[in-house]
Image (cartoon, rainbow, N blue to C red; front, side, top):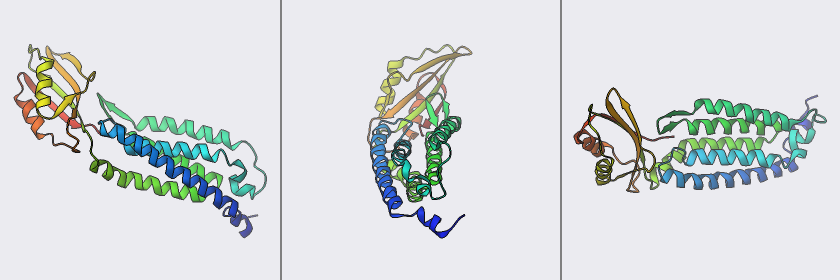
Length: 247
């Protein structure tokens, strides 16, 4: 029977203490994940601070609750636990992985949906925390996820970074571009072509190049207008497409 004593069991001194310990682990993991993610964001990679922070925090949450099985379900306020909850958690994590993979999109070197996938996985962990009765930790993690999604992107844009740009160039038929000339042009506009990112295709007798260029300056979100104007005047270019690489 559901009684006031049963409800109070989920907020006992022991469970509140456990929730505080879990909360400290969540905060620490989020900060460390943001630190690692900033290094990737600084170099213009697809996965940035939000993605790393959410994944690190969700991983810590799953790991730390495994150390307090005696406190699950209000310390068994409704009776002994039937079955193995860890197998249920394992199934949830596996299933949500397939869902997260479905929201990640890749077009050439441009990748999108990574933060959405990380937030989905973090949401599943929030559900697990609620399921085992760690309500305080679940509410804190939901709050941290919301802050990460809304404010970390603003912090990421404010911090110095080298913004990556995804470039597609289509040349005139029978024109053979020279990579060194292209590198010199982009370098003069403040960008470096990432080593190993150049991809070359031949379509209807015309070459099409795709590559990633990274801003040499540390200023965030450099405008593309100057680079676009230079590409429009570059010898042999028939058409081009520029886009900031985002996650």
